[in-house]
Image 1 (cartoon, rainbow, N blue to C red):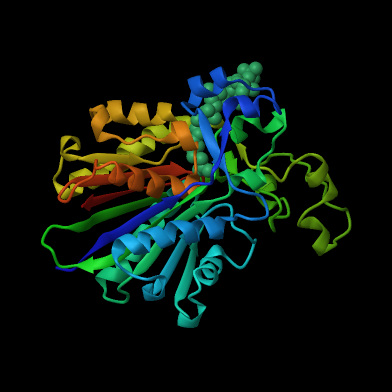
Image 2 (cartoon, rainbow, N blue to C red; image 1 turned 90 degrees about the vertical axis):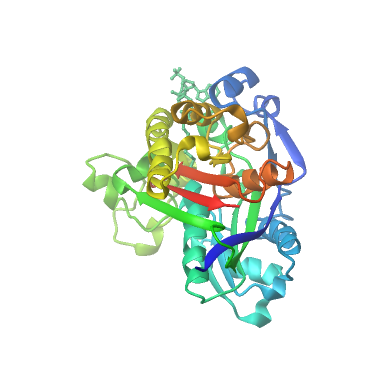
Length: 356
Ligand code: ACO
């Protein structure tokens, strides 16, 4: 039976290290608060005007291609997950294609907007295309340049201290090796709480969802029916309404419930136990969340990979960066059962079981 294997992985993080103490110089926060609540010590920020979400993705992709033994020209489909795209449109899929110098191939390029679970959603789509024999070398990439869109005043501290920049990429190929490859992917969503963790403006919502939810939010829309003026109003600019917002405790409670649920769902279907997991790669949302999940599943420290301490939350890039780091450290070997899991804005959550 044909399955999908991860033939090569790579990651890229920018050189610039930003410590918690660097942030406490510009906003009211402290190294102690950030480490205690999130486990984060530092994160990376890309070079403004020189690095973008798609250029970092290209860096990670080149490494993944080399490890898969292919050239970027061999990629026959691109799936790009991000919440911090270079442009509102077109998406980063075509930009990474151009950055890799493979526009002459006219391959398909798909953009996925599923935030922290974006890489897993992208992986799942790639898996379907490989198993049906549609493509042979699919690039699945998650990349984020958060630092360009965060609020560096005290108003944004609960969100800003968490996020970092980086990219992770995987090349998917078919394999006939018995038992090897992606065993399953599980995808879930619940839009009930879409606004609890969201980047709302600028957008084309015109206040609709807030009215429907019975929430009075003044976006500063003009009284006249002037369409073009409601995308980004002066009030949104003045009040910083164009930054991400998050109800942290609410998100935290949902995350610690959904992570174990979606991992167990995959294990149960495969007739496996948590103890069979060789390496769990949780989306790096908060070290406390990962520790809670580890405890709930009864996993040892050596069965869970955490790197949020050094990169913060890199959203769609976090799972492939962590997967790649664990693999580079020799902690993932052929035949190991690898479990990927993520939860984030939407809410969306997902898992994947891979026999490496
Ligand atoms: N520095 C200092 N104080 C802060 C900071 C900061 N950076 N941020 C918030 N505070 C203050 C708050 O103002 C509040 O003060 P108050 O009590 O005087 O009002 C106090 O600290 C507690 O704030 P909470 O938001 O309740 O803090 P909490 O313990 O919940 O930690 C955190 C916040 C780290 C964000 C946590 O809630 C969390 O990790 N949530 C989940 C995040 C997550 O999983 N996101 C999903 C993935 S991301 C994605 O999908 C895009």
